[in-house]
Image (tube, rainbow, N blue to C red; front, side, top):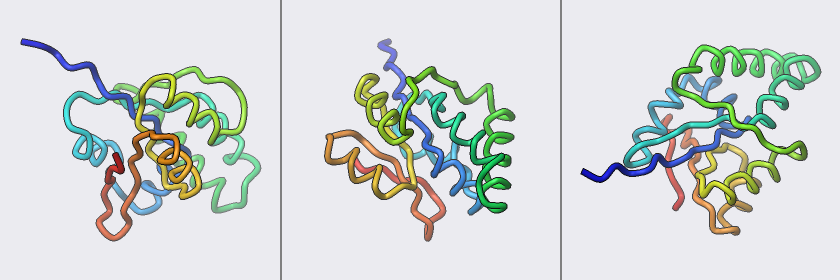
Length: 136
């Protein structure tokens, strides 16, 4: 029996906060959208951005960022934090996805368009369905 290598999915700040705000089962939805084994990862740059937002964003963003950080912490067995270079989070996401052959999961339209333009695979949150869908 041949085991398939796990597909790496990188979570962007926007999809974590958006999914939690809309009460979407983000991880379950990703497992449904990606066929086969999946390794869901949070880039270190995303964690740093959430930490910054948790202390210096608007009241709403601070709350959402704190909830997102708690969500990540409580799902350590299903999520991996991966080391990434410092820099603008969107660029870090794109470069990391290119290097790993990973899928980017985002709710950020600008990041989604740039990823598709670069030939990267993208998962996005479809609000009306409250599920994650792919653009491959």
